[in-house]
Length: 274
Figure 1 (spheres, rainbow, N blue to C red):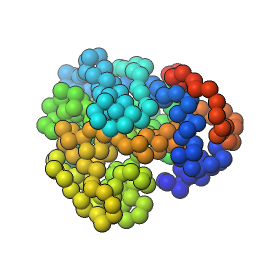
Figure 2: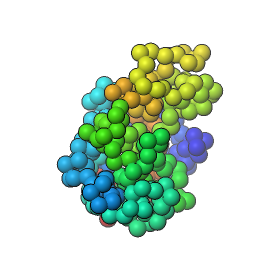
Figure 3: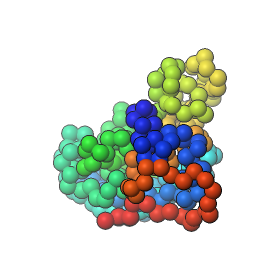
Figure 4: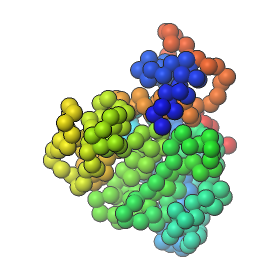
């Protein structure tokens, strides 16, 4: 998928250099992502209130804004709508019924984040599509998370809302920090050190690969407990903005971007809900 990202950036903007492109993307202002939040439940089981949903949105903004200790990725989230669907089948088997569920409920275009909550399970707490997949199956685009992983949820060690932070990282174009283990290119980001395997619990410190740097056990794209997670890196922020420009930004017809200087713009709201 990294090769596809580079080809797409070069085709759309005339360069695949993420650092060079990023200076222009950041001048355009923050990315404000509209969120369509779909609560799947079975009667009272799985029901989430408006307050629950808004707490999750606040957690996303804190994590992606650097409030937990990492960098500010310049991505923010705005709740555009949320609704409830009472379906035992969808609630207990969201993987099995993913296609029908998303076909019925999904709203918006490539730049609208659709989040679905259900009883995903205990081994896998959520799953997500990548931005590269949108062009082939747009109706499947989105993130599914277990309702018990929201802030204040009942999943021990995974109750701060960081499952959504992690899965939305995939939706925005990030891989796991342990992608490819100790083999090149890892996750393709220079400032997330190589990591042989996922972190478990909250290790004090760990170094599983010979390459420079200790394992990024506190990164939101690892598998540590929520209490251990706190950061995205500057490189991950650049990758998010590059992937957005390649796959989720509105098509404007231009094949290249002005890489010169120009006045800074205000906050940019992308993907207004339809």
